[in-house]
Image (cartoon, rainbow, N blue to C red; front, side, top):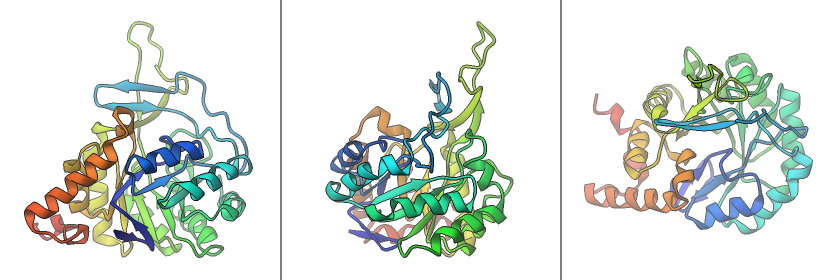
Length: 300
């Protein structure tokens, strides 16, 4: 067992937001597949259809998506969150979004009766106008949003950061100053694909967010930089599909890792990664994850 911001987890793998987190049943399934914790789909104050299709395309080096934060609203999602909390058997983190501090607070207050184990504040989605990165690129807004939630709840507050900024550390510090218990790095990287036969952009929204293998080096660098300057834990996410990837992220400074796109290739990814990490720790004589968290900083 391990402890991240007060959450007891059986292993350091976490289902990332937006992947298999739309229903309570899906969250429960991911927990049974081996995830140490699960994060819901990002939930807002009003029902949202998201962007028109095509909203996701697989590329050679990852996935490009522009879902547009589709969700049923916190009121309709509440029963699904309650179901997951009752049966998942692992920490359930509620991912929430809004256009300002008041909207974030409204959603958090609306979900509190389900007793999520933590809130993850989505200030990083790159393709939803007025939300996500529209908030998360401004350190003043990030601090205000984080403070709005940390002031009204005793449960951990995680802030998911965007890489689409000049300096992610500045944003991370703003989250920490607002009372964040951890930051999650990173969300997807802005990208685009064009069909050369028609000349049209492939996605219905024209551009979207790149996830998967192609962004892992970016995520590792962001985690490394944040670990040097922040005093709170970092949850690493971006292109992790093997235990070797997870070890690399942990050595950069992550206390745990989230798994997103790799779930599409097989839900056994959580158990495969956690078992591989355990073998690695044993082989190299380490006692626990903490022994290697940020070890790359000592090697420079």
